[in-house]
Length: 330
Image (cartoon, rainbow, N blue to C red):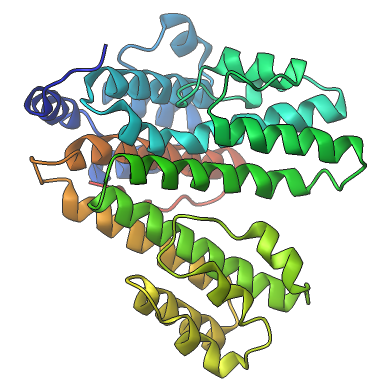
């Protein structure tokens, strides 16, 4: 059951946060001569606490990371005084699972090891829904989206389009809950900025690939502060004017700066890097605000950043490459 006390949740998070990995610990893992010794260095930190012994003995690092993330998400959802708002940060897991299950069904393969526990929705619910094509037990936005996808697939629509439709459902659901909860703080800022940057990326890609404006509209997501028509109206805008055209709303300056840097470098990854930095800064600024969900969300996202860092380190080691020390959200 979720806790009703924010004070209790934040107190518990303060204790849990002492077990997050540090940059120094990551450096020791990287400096270990072999993969086996790197795994031993990780286990010495206590990272696998709560993970079944069988998984630890098996030695598959990705399974250990997945199990730790699942435990962390479950623990956080039990602690939070507001499951709906915190659940918004779990929707990317559900989005991944829906895409994976649908792709697996279309290809006639088992989604199995590619699925992730710890979303806002039960994994069994999603499995049953995609298998039976019955989505009435999902929230209305997801039900309508998945019903439309199934109808489109019957008509022979390009199955690749369903990925963007499921992404769109996630942001629609976020916008709906934020409005219902009258959320105007950092969570609203986070999703607003995320949506605006994603739409800016979509606009740039659409221009590069010479899409028509109707195709662009299909991939634009809600919840942003920049009106959707601003993106669709600038398909033909000269590149040197694009940044100024998108500089509107509370996120306009950040988006415009990223677009300007992209125009100068012709490197699309610049926009994504700017987005990730801006999102992390929102969480870092709020993680010490003990009158909000900031510390709770911050811990959840720090665990996520930690998992990504470990996967990058062990992936590099297993591939024989030199691993870098990734940045952690702490």
